[in-house]
Length: 410
Ligand SMILES: *Cc1c(COP(=O)(O)O)cnc(C)c1O
Image 1 (cartoon, rainbow, N blue to C red):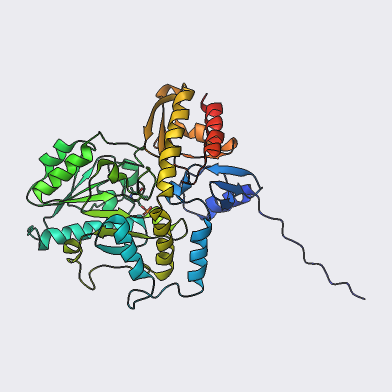
Image 2: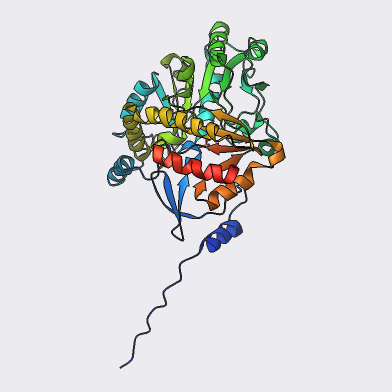
């Protein structure tokens, strides 16, 4: 009797293998920490060897509701078995309800959906320019949009054209004209920069990539007043700051003002699908006509079913409240620890920038040591450690994280 050869079982790839294959075959457009994640649940992730880590980055706030949140995954699975993509050539039974429910959440009247955050920003730029020409009667080709120093709005050629970060911009020209940069947090500079051809002012309520920079008290109120007075659209990029992160549904609520156009992305896709959009008033959105803008996947039924669940979850206010209470607790605990390398703590809600004093070196080695202790976070620029855990984090889990921070930074 001939024995059948038993097929050899392939050995599972190690973390080392996965890192190598990624670096060998992938572009080097990121500098990741050497951890290879295989699974996630809530604030925790598990690497390929089975080691658990707390995720205190939450995919730059795209995973606000934790990894694989049950209600969102259930909504996704249900929609996966129904229909996933129709394009906007036809209607479907998810997109319209997503629009209506998001209008209620944002207090706006009209939604234009896209996929990535950068596409949301591009949509806001196009809408503002078109509004400038058709409503404000700016001469053709002259519309100006004012932006802030140290801004981050994405990676397209137009968006990096108004970046002030050389690593985002250098080598990618020629640049799109029509933008003027003013210092962030300086309302007087904004007012001085506005002229008859200014269509909009684009601003992050808190600058995330710049290192969790909170503007001076009253800045956004003053911006609102100036924009209204000068007939300039105020565009708030809430892609990272919105959807509960700061203890409010939208970070701009802290200042009690409402933008003319709000840009959403990241967490609106529940950490499952790319989904972004602009929300605005009808009198502004009506400048966009059929054929003038869109995206094949923008507003697809799968993403919208997920977005609807995210809106439902946010409507309870539970996550916003937890972000406020746990955020305050985190700030209190880290402050009380009095860590020598810490120059400054910045942020709001569950969003913290730990600025490292120059004489203590860069933030990156601290992130590497925190990783070894089981806490994942990421540096932004050279000197800032960014903490942005999922908004479902508990007091016990914060205690756990602070113990690691104290060990590494103490
Ligand atoms: C992440 C981010 C973007 C870009 O979103 P992508 O989905 O990466 O294109 C734009 N603006 C802000 C404030 C962001 O944080």
